[in-house]
Image (cartoon, rainbow, N blue to C red; front, side):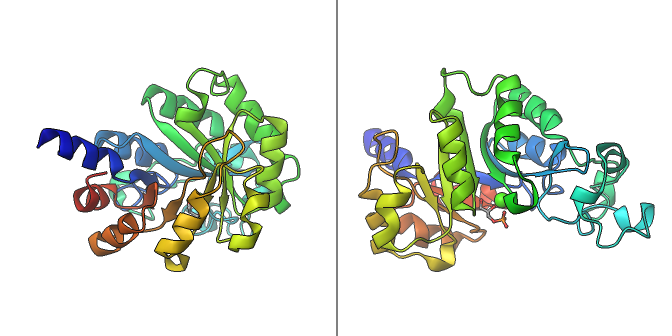
Length: 268
Ligand code: G3P
Ligand code: CA
């Protein structure tokens, strides 16, 4: 019946476009979040790091080398870590050509530029604070940009934003600074440690290679800091069989480079 179908659809895991729709456009660029929006996906996951002069930028690796033409533009600056470059230098780089000549001229967005675009696209964010040990204070700075861009007002706060990190300290810090913000810990904590994580994280987001049905259920049995059951978003699943497997475990969401493939497999 249509009722049953509706119920089934609402049980489908949320599909989150990893680094934007990064199988189809260069990861962590405005083109990749636009691509996700064009494909009908509102949720995107992207990564935040910091330049030498303190600008927050959207980039996955600590180094610019893999996803930009930095080696050509600045041949003597090995290993091309973003924290050793100014924002003006980063702005000169091409972050699209490595992926496809179609995306020549794509840039490494500043977090501000990125927030502007996802706001315009009416998107929802899983924002990862990357390598926080390299960037003291990045938690507060990230929250500041989110606040300036209007993303920390109580209206819709927890329906469109999650801040995540592999660093438990960073997740704890974000929760302490802005308790209203939804947070996620990236990793696979042991079940005995879950009560502690549940004091500061609303989600536990583990690699799909580390999870089982019982582990997912164990996480969801705890309530998070906002009094709701902990959620599980797993990553990075790009194939239909894998998606059906983790959907069968009852995960709340799937973070994927190929959101269309995952939606087709799960109805999410
Ligand atoms: O959101 C999960 C995933 O992004 C974590 O791994 O390396 O792709 O940032 P990574
Ligand atoms: Ca990430």
